[in-house]
Amino acid sequence: MSKLFSFVAVVGLFAAIVHAQEPAADDKAAKVEKKEAAADEKAVEDPEKVDWSQVDWKKRLTKLQYYITREAGTERPFRNEFWDFFKPGEYRCVGCGAPLFESDAKFDSECGWPSFDKTIAKDSVTEHVDLKMLQPRTEIRCRRCEAHLGHVFNDGPTDTGLRYCLNSAAMKFVSEKQLKKELDKMKKPEAGEASSEKAEEKPAATVESEAEKP
Ligand SMILES: [Zn+2]
Image (cartoon, rainbow, N blue to C red; front, side, top):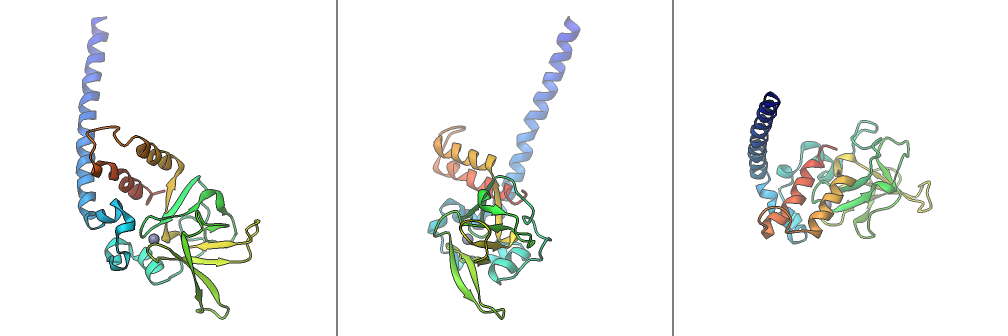
């Protein structure tokens, strides 16, 4: 019995040491990430107060994201992140984090790009005439930061009749689980450690960085 007890005690002690080390490693990583994101911190705190026309997009985005969203580029079909991705959640602008589409609106258009039949809200995107091809197309951009997202066509198979054809690199995916966490944090802002206004803002940043790896 005493042997069993000491075994349990040793295991418990070991687990406690491992557990104690984990947060330290996380803290370090978080600090590095925080430094890198320092320039964007304001943007995360209140995106509506940011002058998005003044953002240094080359610093904020990867090369591909920059090419797509700031140079109106197009990714290759079937060679992008979300064309055949159908998990429940929400798609947000990779530039400013504005919600754009819900997974419920996503359908397989067999075109090799992620396609949706409606936006998450009426004013989440703006439409612009695009004359780059022989036939004029309707380009869509993020309402908030003007990121080029893709195009919208009138040949959608659902009752909206619309097909929003997106570039994966213009979006970040936030899973249903992450959305629930965000909601819970909003409902109970004092939960957890000593809360300050800044601590309440942190979850949004976490979700954003997690969303880069769907
Ligand atoms: Zn945006």
